[in-house]
Image 1: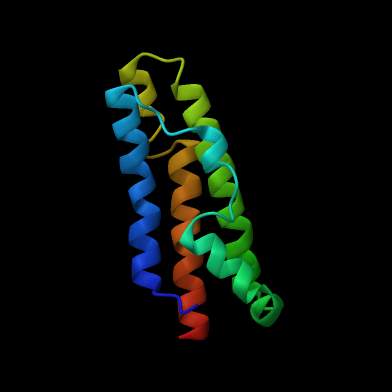
Image 2: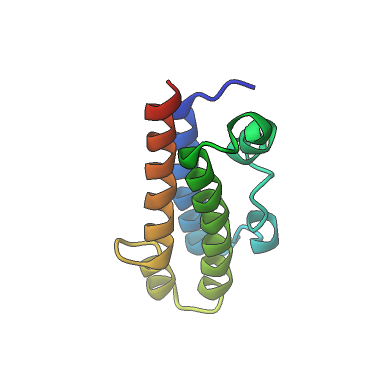
Length: 117
């Protein structure tokens, strides 16, 4: 499985749109579906390449940041479900745990791209 780094970054950033849409429409993504880090394309790629790239520090950093992102996204979805819409949407903004975890995951993708591309 080849990794299209730009496609992975774009797909990763779409999580925010999905969560935002769930908040606005009231049809929230199931946090239990989001929490595992091995179901999305990036997670599948990571698992497939762990034996080959596992010793690479940038790969290890990506694994950790990707895992952390999924846990934070799941926590955000759980917390947002009980909040008024404006407060739930604010959980996705700059400076929040969600935004910080998302940015760290993107940075890790970029760092790995620099290392292996």
